[in-house]
Length: 334
Image 1 (cartoon, rainbow, N blue to C red):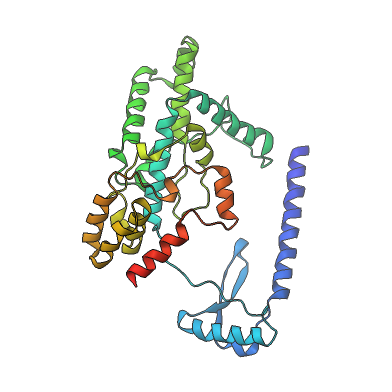
Image 2 (image 1 turned 135 degrees about the vertical axis):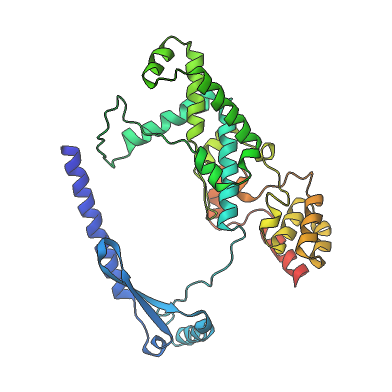
């Protein structure tokens, strides 16, 4: 009960802080009268069913006028009053493609884990420690279970995210292992514990490794700075070139022509990419696929990045050659 009371106190304190932040935000929101006729608001039902208002919305066709007004306000010493949202830009990878790529990364991590019971044991121990020792989000379970551990097989999520998943080497390896264990285990759930008790520890650890691998997840629709699988990828020394290859069907057909040219520039050089600028998309994809066939190029979301590299990029440093490649592509397609 003491823990529950502490949780309720923290929840009340968090609510109070959120209300204070909202009050400060409202007080700092000043809308010049000469700009209000070009902006609008939307009234909607917010959290807990309360009425909420979103102010300062600008139509795309009014953006240039508002930018000019913002510059004039800045010249008049009112730079802090006007703040335009960043214009929407199309991401390099669509939601569907990102989910597909990260699903293949998850499948590869799962397959790599099969050969590393040491990492699997550390991974599940770490997660249990985080949940039971470091996470103060108390929950009460009604189920009649000997261990209050919930687990989810990510198999269906991977199939849903990537239509080509079943043909991948990582999926085939995991599926083979899954069928092998299904044949070995007793069919009655109540008999599993007794069966495991008479097995050698190596067998039990091997099964645990497969089960841990089956729960690995980390599918994203929008490309994140870091992924939940990063730590495991580092521990496993994951090299996605073993499990995935950039081709027309796996990647190039699903990105813009500019990105196709960027890929060839990164994977080979600008001389190989330059002729693609004059071609139509299908021809450019075919040429790019041939050019990068032996390069082992990977999109950023499939690369195994050290933690310090991720932090450096978040701090503002560009990925190696990233800015130079973008400038070269812009010049070729201008």
